[in-house]
Length: 113
Image (cartoon, rainbow, N blue to C red; front, side, top):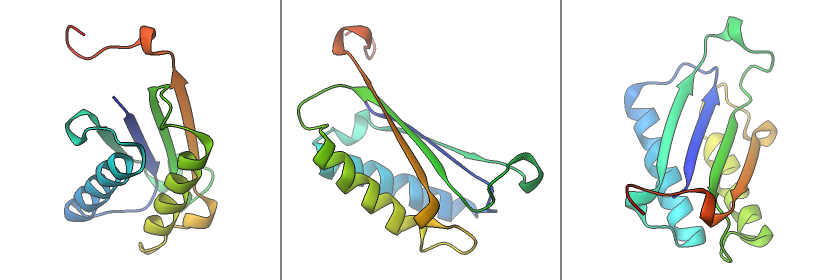
């Protein structure tokens, strides 16, 4: 159950946000085998006066620790996200910050599981 929070200060149209959300869902699913319906993405857009590093996305990925969520696949996912971010005007994918938090499986659940 990956939970992905994307934060940036670049004005983004609704269709572009949806494109990014869909890309992240697919990238996470393809890279670590997570079911798409269990990937949650939240897009947070900040006013430029509310951030210190303009155009620098910050992505926090919280998920349960599993074998496929290893350093190699994390590096692949970082590369995919940074390359995608570079496609947008005023976004610097090379400066994107991607942070992973691996939660022990016994410390998380979806619904009643």
